[in-house]
Image (spheres, rainbow, N blue to C red):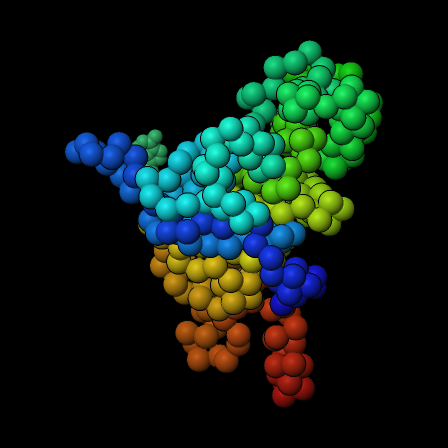
Length: 301
Ligand SMILES: Nc1ncnc2c1ncn2[C@@H]1O[C@H](COP(=O)(O)OP(=O)(O)OP(=O)(O)O)[C@@H](O)[C@H]1O
Ligand SMILES: [Mg+2]
């Protein structure tokens, strides 16, 4: 198990839960689609959960329930133990407590300066100017941009920087749960690595619960404590990274791109070589294979 994951899982207080959550698009018409079905999960306080699944498996639909953007056709969403729909007057506060950053959030940047854009959410919350300014400063730090960006126009930034500013805008609301839908989509490898690193360090600094939707098993495995695998509207697996990777073959059958190193391990196993199937980093594979390689080279001498 990854370092730190055990601590998070030991403190097993759910912050966000779903109970038999089902959502059907265009219900009652010929074209109805069940996007999620009977989803029951507990997200624990402070954990970083990766949500993966093939395209159309229901990831985005699921997370849109977490800040009450969608209301389940049936089932419930609980935040800190309370049904988020129990009192409609509290929906606004749910949206502040669960911050969702949708795909390509940079399309929603519109202010003249980066600082104003980041301040938009906190201002909406009715915070004092001083508090808003503090949050803008902190959020820039969280996303690894220097304070000199504050007065720049968001439109003069690179694609990766715009993405980081948009994410900073959600972070500045200081939600208890931060949900990011494909935050690395469309970025180059360097941009992807920066954004992933930034999310991991944000969680480490704030202790915030983070949900990260991604197509990439590799990205998720690198930073998540647990992985929620969606398959055709259902939860296929929800477990630690190691435990989920022990189903590498099934993940592949679900059309997921498992890391190349995991694929290599699976092919070695098919050839009858007894290596663990749940490896997902080059270092793990190296550690598993090294004793054999040493033996092999001695043999060859
Ligand atoms: N507005 C909509 N109307 C009808 N069906 C929809 C709508 N949005 C999504 N769906 C369907 O609901 C199912 C789940 O879609 P969803 O977007 O939640 O999946 P996803 O896992 O986020 O996919 P992706 O990886 O492509 O983002 C799919 O079958 C999709 O076609
Ligand atoms: Mg989606």
